[in-house]
Structures are given as C-alpha cells and as structure tokens.
Length: 291
Ligand SMILES: Nc1ncnc2c1ncn2[C@@H]1O[C@H](COP(=O)(O)OP(=O)(O)OP(=O)(O)O)[C@@H](O)[C@H]1O
Image (cartoon, rainbow, N blue to C red; front, side, top):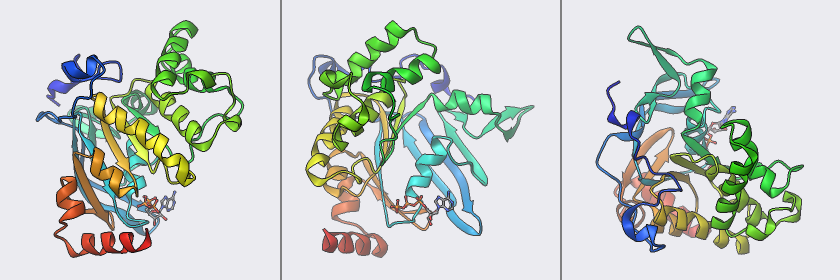
C-alpha cells in the first residue's frame, strides 16, 4: 500500500486548525485537498441475516472533507459509521482508512481479516458521536473526557486534564467539568460527548444523528459546536443527519443513500436544491411535508 498519507506528519487535528486565518481565530472555509481519499469503501457488503444493508458500496471521503449522508430510515446510513468505528464487521469488500485496510491486514501480499490489535490501532483514527451521547453516567464530565486518553493513549493525568480543559472550552462547558451527566441538559451532554471524542485527537469525526434525541430548543447549541469544528478545523467529518438546513450549511458534499447504495451525491446545492434522481426528489419532498 504505497500511500503517502501513511507517513503524513502534517495531518491536522483539532489542535491544528487549517489555514492562517483559523489559527488567529478567524473562520477559514473548509477546503478538501485533492489527494488520496482518507476513507475508501470498495464494494463493501454488509448483511444482517438475509438482509443486505450495504450492497457493494463504493464510497470515498477525502482528507478534510465534510460529507453528509442523508436517506430514508433503514437505508444503511448508521451502519456505514458503525463499520468505520469497527462496531460492525463487513461481509465482503475492503475499506481503507488513511490508506490502510481497516478490517484487514496485509500478510504476504494478501489481505486477511484483521486481528484485534490492528482494529484497536485503526480505531484511533476516528472519533464518534452517537445519537444517545453514551457518556459514562458514574463519571464526572472531566473524567468522561480524560478516561480514554489515559487508558488508551496512556497519557498522564496532567496531560489528559489539559486536553479536557481545552476541549471542554471548545464546546463551551468549562464551568461544568465537575458535574455528572445526569446534572446536564441533553445538549450539554452531547457537547461533552463531542469533547470526549476530540480528546482522542482523531483525524476523522463521525456524527450519527447527533441531534435527533434532543429537544428542539437544544438542537442549535450542538449544531453550532459542530459547525465551528467544521469551519475552523481541518478534521474530516462524516455526518448522518436529518437536519437538512444544517447539512446544506456545513457540507462539502451530500450523499443520498437508499437501500445500501449511493443514489446521488454532489454539492449541497446539487443534491438538496436541484436533485436529479427521482428517489432523491421523493425523499426530499416527503421530508419537507413532514417538517
Ligand atoms: N445489529 C443489527 N442487527 C440486525 N439488523 C440491523 C442491525 N443494525 C441495523 N440493522 C438493520 O439494518 C438496516 C440499516 O440500518 P441503519 O441503522 O444503518 O439504517 P439508517 O439508514 O441509519 O436508519 P435510521 O435513519 O432509521 O437510523 C435496517 O433495516 C436495520 O434494521
């Protein structure tokens, strides 16, 4: 696998905002580079029993790109993210992340199923924010953010605390660090979940319907944080959402999924405003009628 991105020390993280403007606190537009994809699905098949959820899916995301996946319920959107996070295995095909096979390892020039150690290593490339926050209820906000950096990355407590301070500030929760999740609103809990994912300094952030379990008045605060991340940092972001207006604002590319395949993809304007495929048109029409 001769991929220059494997040795790319310039890979940006939330610590390394892109562009000079961003470093000064200005908003820099996210501009994906034209290099190798950071995520590549090649003919990926995922089945649950007899049901084919991903049907020979080909899909790419470039470094720094902000991609939104939309589509009807059950079309396989969350499954794409869960497979990337190594929470679900695949039945066929290959996935590459930063040029390395995710679910496989190369042995004697052949791809064989990956051992747990490889998966653990690959997992560090990605952070995921779930619909249901998934915070540890018995840990303070600070501990929720420091736990994985200490346990997985073997950071000292001091280093992990510094990171927690930084990312809790980024999500606007510096003053809540000693509270427990149950003492926070849903929007605050989701912002802790974002800080927790960022504290692992992933190159890729996966958001699985991050606002769909929030009361409507709390959606905005979470979207604002995600929007700031998208605008000010060179993170690669893959987002599943039903927030069409938000998708329009932050995405470089929108993919419309149906029945485990990409039916249509393009700029937000192409897919959300001027969709060409009848299935996309129907989906957006019924979406508008329901909202
Ligand atoms: N662990 C599982 N076991 C069995 N079937 C599953 C499992 N996870 C997902 N599925 C099925 O796979 C299909 C795709 O699910 P997925 O959650 O990816 O859809 P989705 O597009 O994200 O839908 P939604 O918008 O409702 O979240 C659905 O039919 C779902 O019932």
